[in-house]
Picture 1 (tube, rainbow, N blue to C red):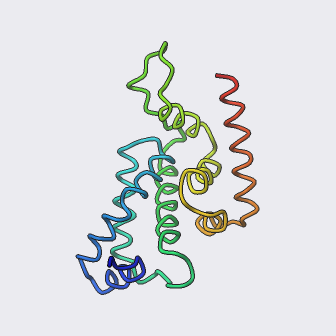
Picture 2: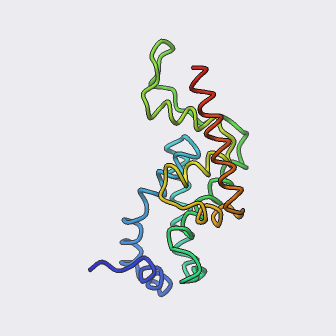
Picture 3: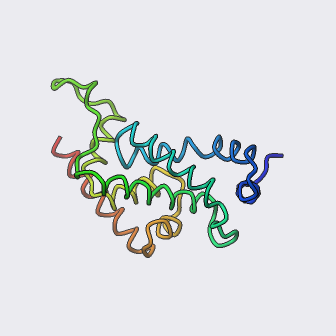
Length: 169
């Protein structure tokens, strides 16, 4: 039977590299996908992911078992890493359009990234966590440092904005 996330974090706290490797294998794909949804850049998502797992290795002892799920703690670290990255840069719409021509409609994934990239970061984050990820509104609220009602409001505004953007395409 595979060890739980909590057991892995406890082992990482003790410097267990095998536990870290298993934790990394288990959680790198969803963290990288989350970072990509927010940044729109594979390179930025890789940078964020590297920062996240470096922090996990260095600060595993900061996880408080029973307070939040490990995945919520991990996404909080990822969210903060994305915000730090975006603060260091000029605001820009994160879209990779190199494979698109002006006359071709974007593929669904490219279209989704383009539409999400046009949303404000807080709305994009709420959508990535709750609608595209596997987090409840309550978990997203913890990650974002706000109330569940505020997260629901962000999602509602994002849905309206996305519907309007699709209507204008």
